[in-house]
Length: 218
Image (tube, rainbow, N blue to C red; front, side, top):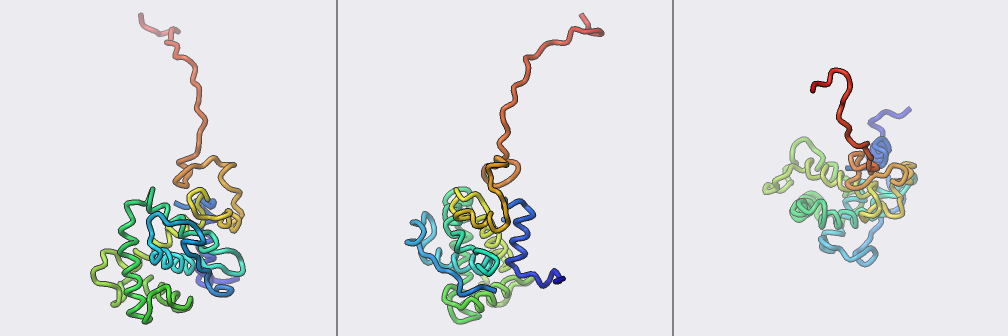
């Protein structure tokens, strides 16, 4: 039996999604897939450069491997773009600044922007960011720690991987199929992806009738 520490991050994230029922509130065979705006849809918020970096980042967080699809297959970038135009609109600044911080750090430590690195070097960058203390190359002007920013990106990647496909990610329900989740119809969930949005039928209560039995005064 493998130790918990032997689990890949992909296995860990997939199992976490399975435990939560496929509803998120949030080694590769071949190289990571690449998609562009032309191959998905016109982006509403992200620039093409930002989108390319998000694609590369999400694919390293949830890479395609022999056990199933990854973030690129699920079009996580489309989910993130639409989310930043709607229910995550207040977090657009985190992307505007954070993707610059990422490239600054990547260039300082590996000599190139994140999207231009090999998958192994991208993994090295993310491993360095996931530190209790900011690595010295993390921009001093950043108002989030490197770990906090990375965990934020992981959360959004998981949302895009396992949320209802109508929000742009989980294309063709690849995330749900990965964890054998049957979909939303049996459960009646609605956004933003939690039990608290279960659609409950209206209950018809009987008309109120005042009590007139024993002990009723007057």
